[in-house]
Image (cartoon, rainbow, N blue to C red; front, side):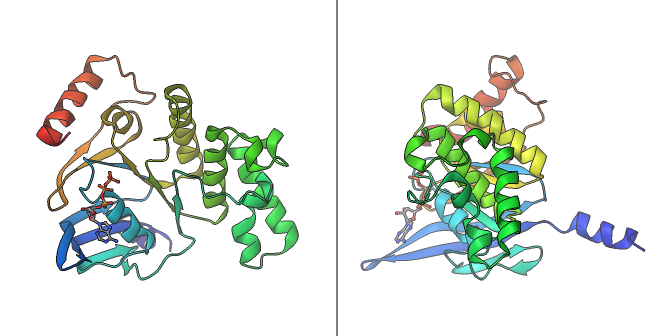
Length: 260
Ligand SMILES: Nc1ncnc2c1ncn2[C@@H]1O[C@H](COP(=O)(O)OP(=O)(O)OP(=O)(O)O)[C@@H](O)[C@H]1O
């Protein structure tokens, strides 16, 4: 019977941070990058981490990615400790991290090919995700032939081709102009919905967080802490000129207080 299993998976969060503290040695000093952070994320949620420079956003993301381990507390994926990086959690970097000598299709198929998947399967997977991010016409192009926004889409497709359930994005649109940024926000939401992803997205921009997130997690520095976790109940696509949007903008701005 499938029902009891479904009930169990519905209550188990895909990710959970339990009282996570992260300290770094810095010369003779110790820096507490993150202090006693607890957070529960359900499958399919779009979470934005927001806060001023140095509040531990990247540190938290890197810990979920498995690049760093907790000094105290635990970080769990499907109830099991995150011990190392894995293809189930894909990071999209601001500088895209594409291989310049490979085409769009080869970049997207890189992960499955490196894991030894059969050629035909790699090709089909790459094609599927190149199509999904709207780059069919550029399948054979090289990264230098693409715009910043297109490179960003390749980076997302590459993560998806790895079967990632969780996509980690550290200010991915920070380097883009406002117009491209808005278009990519829409496209990301589209891909997120289609691929049923769980996204953790770091941003400095309150408006971007309200456009994108199901929940906005607000952090503050010195030491890095989670100070609020706000649900955004507005229907998508969200209108930044609406009174509800503005009320949330003021509210989050207040939570960020003097830090922002
Ligand atoms: N490897 C490291 N060694 C020493 N200190 C570190 C290391 N990584 C991060 N830190 C420190 O931890 C704190 C949090 O850094 P983190 O990069 O997580 O902040 P952030 O909120 O992502 O900042 P930004 O918005 O500027 O990217 C900072 O004080 C930083 O100097």
